[in-house]
Image 1 (cartoon, rainbow, N blue to C red):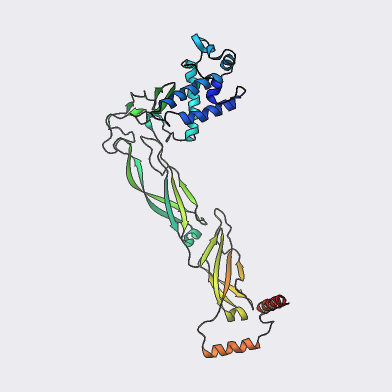
Image 2 (image 1 turned 90 degrees about the vertical axis):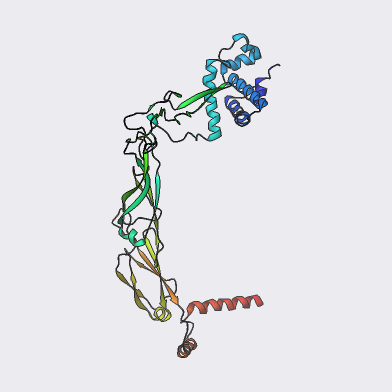
Length: 380
């Protein structure tokens, strides 16, 4: 059967540039790849066809020969470097690398291993909750962390004492094996040594060949003064031990602050709502508020204080992390309306209401005056 025109195979015009050629090829390759069409002979044949077409057209010299002589340019050994030649395999391997990158986004290689299967240990996470007072003062705390540690019997090698790991015969110590599939070469992790390049004939009885054992580790953590909610503390090398003598991972401690009974925090500033009586708000007065340092601070309330009035206490907030500075404390008053009044209290309030004027309640008087004007205008 006569071969189809290579430009037709890739679905591009004869004037297509290298970028158009590569884009068309990659799109078709992803659709026709054998892994996506298992057992489909037609897809396999089409996949080989687009590979052959792209191999010719992406090469300037081959493309020029093809444009002049057509398929005959590569018959009887003409045009060295065609499908099956050494040059083809090298270029095609790079092309397949591009395809797999498109499939997997460059991921999927797994954790990187060093020589002898040494693999870095996993990082660990530990969640710790502390109080606002502890964040203010700072503290030193001991924690217990279940983790993997280097096996003390085999010193992390994974091999029985007196023996050593040997080079994997399947992959020759490379950790990767190659297999030919049609026109291209697929490289995979060695199934015998799992990519480590070495095998252990006699594994350590204690760790089973992993070079690690599980143990609960006691660690001391320094919580700095002024630490914020969500802060991450890194303890280098305190994660899981590496496989077969590999470097250990790290331990990350995530700090969370417990809700406080009185205070809310915003950075280095502290906020607190304080209820005061109606008479204290009207006549003025003062009250004591606690601070995180354990002291008391007086807050003076002027006459006529309204709900939501905010008072600022400089330097009474949280310490700024790794600094000698402090934030501020903000006290917001909430005027409490009296409840469960006695008859006499009600009478006094009624007398006060009758004796009140617009100057006594300027906000409400002004508001309802505007409301009255509003409804009066609606009636016009």
